[in-house]
Image (cartoon, rainbow, N blue to C red; front, side, top):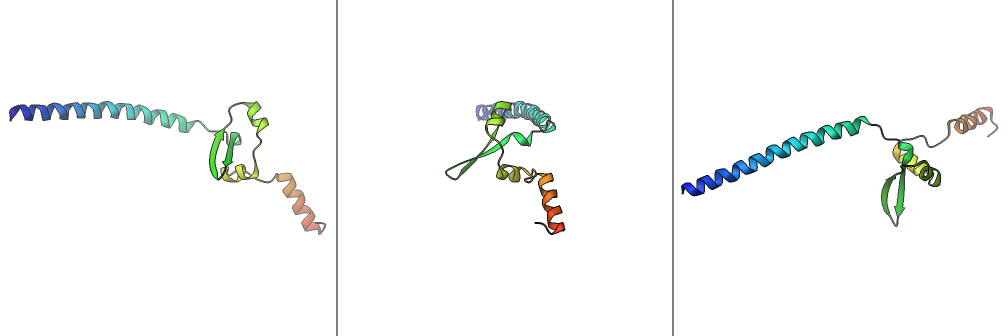
Length: 101
């Protein structure tokens, strides 16, 4: 019976030791996560791809990719970016107010 108790304690110590080491690594991961949150992502580089109803987001890393795949209004809408150019909207409002639109 004492062998069983020692085996159980050894197993608990092994688990507790693993838990401590994972807690340390979790803390390190958490610090890394906080550092990543401090860095701001450039929303103008995100693109939404729709493949037969399957939506996936892609982050473009180079300027060539950004030029080759412009953001759509839907991309901007889902990212919370303005979907209409301010000057175009201002002109439309002005024409509406003047009764010319």
